[in-house]
Length: 61
Image (spheres, rainbow, N blue to C red):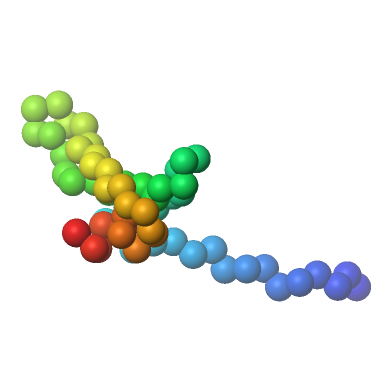
């Protein structure tokens, strides 16, 4: 028998929530998909910047 710790459940953000990361300069960047460009079919992505993680989240807009 091996004593292995139980596997952690992977968590994901809900759809449409985007992603949030801390940039090298210390500010936070939140990215989300605005939609699809009808002319090219490519995703339209936008970024929101802030000094705190909460400020950079898409839900704070």
